[in-house]
Image (cartoon, rainbow over all chains, first blue to last red; front, side, top):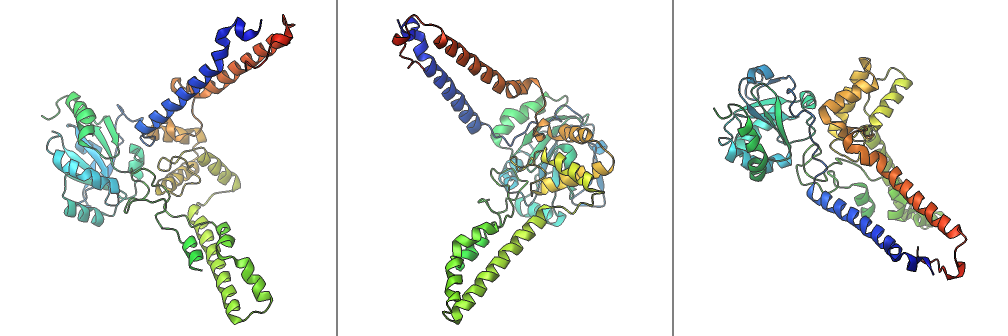
Length: 188
Length: 210
């Protein structure tokens, strides 16, 4: 009496192992298709935003600090004139700037101020205020590693949400707007 | 000759980046800003070996001119390669070799967030240069490797570490391979012992089950 006959199940063990491997690979493939490994979750969510003191784009001698913006929630949108994806995002920002219900503040990242001004003049300015970070040193404290990135900061200066990559109407409807609505006193 | 020069001068943006999309922008596959082709690519293209042998037989002045061109191209290639490596290394004023070694070891363990398959040490991205500078400054302030890593993790999450910490989300990563290896070992041992056992009848055991 041979082994396989004694345990008919044993014959299928290699097949089962093979099927398990295939399942792993398929899950891996699907995961890679649907998730972008570049989008790293920020450890700063629900933590106080870093303090900053950055010049205004329009009046570089005037500075905006984190303390100046406390008291009401706002969106901080990291952009740059050299950033290709920011151009993709731009029409969405133009369309939604008044629908967010909270101020949209531009964060000009590693950019020459004259380039940023020309870019906003050419494409339109969706921002209620633009601050500039030419060195990019403050951006490191925000965990910025590219543009565009968008932060939702509440009235107490806590980062509530971060989106990496261009904002789209889908992202706004699915993620951002619920987060804005969840804030106390948003849109008032 | 043209072919050679074309090989030496890849498109400055490299890897088919859309126009205007440099590194540091959230568009897939746009990392490398400028990498001249390595000088090892040279001998293939121009067939310089045959040209050298022809000159040796004294086949005329045009051949001599040809060889001069080849030498010029080789020189340009080396110059490009040298300038590329000079571009990659920041002129950071280390106190001594030990500090430089520590810096290189530390940055090799950190991920460049823009070019995620490169370390902070090897990446040419603007982002990596800036973080290298920050890490260098922190080292000058006497910060330990752990303090520097914690500082980075607070901003960029543990994703920036190539060596993942032991956490609930990384248990499979840390123990998955040993567990599978152990399971495989158990299977092998069980099978071997079953075969080694004085079977009811060895002749009948065809042994083709596995």
